[in-house]
Length: 371
Image 1 (tube, rainbow, N blue to C red):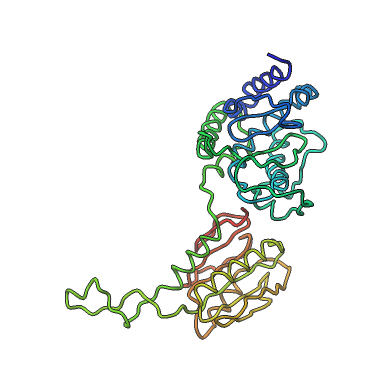
Image 2 (cartoon, rainbow, N blue to C red):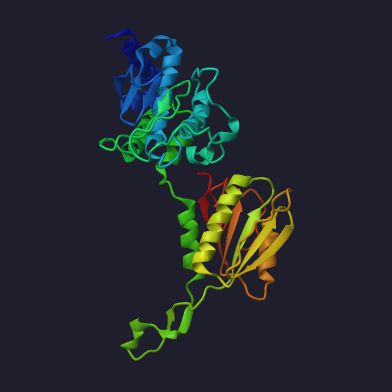
């Protein structure tokens, strides 16, 4: 066994003894010497590849951090989630997503490791959208092992298409490793939270938004078409059908919890849903501690967001404004971090909270939009 491989094996052993969560997961990766294929190290969900010269230049503590770093990429699903994103930028976003967890867990990361407390708890997808695009260096394909520029602790690569190890396999391994570490009293709080979040199915908030509006705003009882289920019994009852969609409402929390990137993504998705569903009108309300702005867009208008405000957060003014309308909206979608004052009584209208923070509300449905 050469020196580089010995150091990596020793690092895995140290993780098994001192950091059992990472140690159990490190054993899922085969070690692959790759002196001509990389400058540092890489991981693809199946193997941990490395240049022996790079490993030889690391201290034991740095080697342990390297193995934990590559393990976290797999635990977070990064080799399976790049899609068509630019590889180098994806590698940076993925590093930001996991390095704070590693630092908080006591690992000795190199000085130039990508760290930003503002990205703590955020997904690589969320971070990617907020990173500046690097200068063009050729086209990265959507499939195969597209490589990004390695960071100080290597790079995350796409999972091989023929790999037998899947993201679901890693999710299961994360739960087992967390349970074993917790039984030993060796699972820090941030890793416990990470394991719980990874257990939950990753849901695209855009599909939830579309489904919510379709289900709550499209359906209405109409006498124009009979309910065929009861016609054979001689009963003429209304069917669940609507000739056109009634008004909908979109509310934006302008207290400072929503950044411009997410605001534009949200506006674009609302526009797409409105173009498809064609509600009679769309109310767009901006509110912090008070209602700051209420814009109304008729069918086929282009939806514009013109935020106003910046104080505290109070959800009551929005629902008071909507309750006073001559024609109440069929549903309300509220973009917020859910850190504010709620109405004491739940409104009659259906509400979807598109949340950048908390995952609970006293009424309505909540979907996370920080991914």
